[in-house]
Figure 1 (spheres, one colour):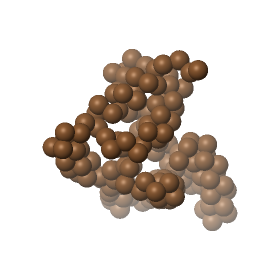
Figure 2: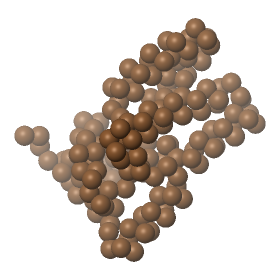
Figure 3: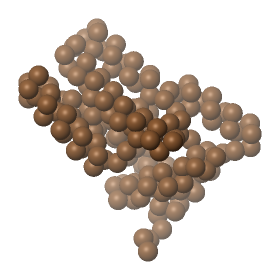
Figure 4: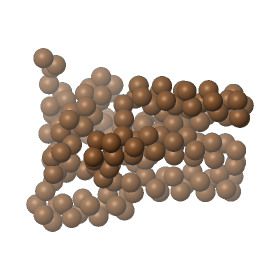
Amino acid sequence: MKLREHLVIGGITAVFLYFRWDLWRALLFFTAAVLIDADHYWDYLWRSRFIDWSPARMFRYYNLFNDNSSDKRCLAFSFLHTAEIFLLVYVLARFWNFGFFITIFWGMLFHLFLDVTDLTYKRKPFLRAYSVIEYWLRKKKLIRQGISPDAFCREIFEKSKQPIR
């Protein structure tokens, strides 16, 4: 799902939550529901070896990634979208600051629900690995079959650096 859609849907939901919660908690929910996508930017920086900080090229990279997602080498991984991170935030809520972290947890879960709904609508619900362990196992299986998801990502990264026509 695109950032714009997360901003609009998350914003509308936060307005409704404001009437149930308070302003700060609704804003925290909205912030968590949007900033979970920071892992995409981190991934782009990692792929560029922290040389290319251009948000425009990062968005171009992910647009190309999505446009080519039917390639059998395509395996998406977004660290903040994994079950392990969700579990960590939930544990923080249970044992440290419940109101703060459970609001972040619900914002992240809302975001993931939107992503999974969008991917299911596009008939690609398993494009992304939803766990670090799942990613590792799926990547290992692809490599055993002679398929390199890393090569796919490098190709898309190189294409994203080309000038727009």
